[in-house]
Image (tube, rainbow, N blue to C red; front, side, top):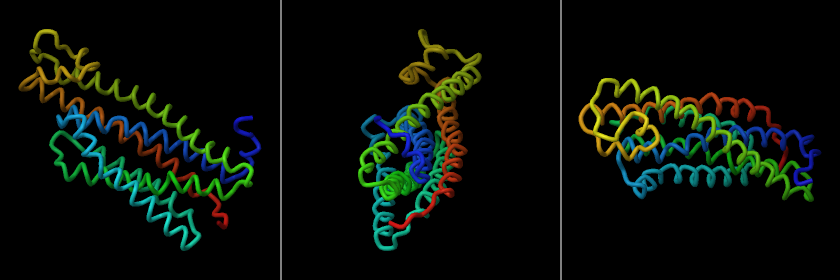
Length: 242
């Protein structure tokens, strides 16, 4: 079998797969809409949206490196997924606070917190699984955790995408009701093609950007209880000696 079912008898492997699934669900569900928020709501280019997300990358790099060093010195690892899931949930809650007027320093700070949380979870789960299984199962156990995180990501993008589309449709309908629009631009077209925002002006543009902002940040809020589930699962991990 590609993934031997007997591995799920190992408590750490089963829990890490579950945490990986839930973390992937929330992480990629949120990550998908960060560039959209920057490009549509704040009007930055695709290239600059990548630059704006560098604090998140720095957070992942910093926390994963520091946690790895501390685990090497102390042999203790459970505290990091417990703390990481909590910090990630806090990061998503902070991202929910963003709006059209949020300055660059605020978005960078919230991205950094989100990245710090992710860095404490992702690599430590793999380490925990590698430490819990037999040597001959090392490869399949490692890829198994990654597999479940990928499956969680696929579900997260689909579910959060549905929630985002529904929220955006309702927000646009409310914001543009009775507002004159340029020829060829409708609430329906803006729902599927945000490039039409460039043709708007005045109240129509302001209402559309607010509609996008509220819909995107609502996705981050939905991710908070999902990460809370991952946090509860992390407490169930048994810290086997490295």
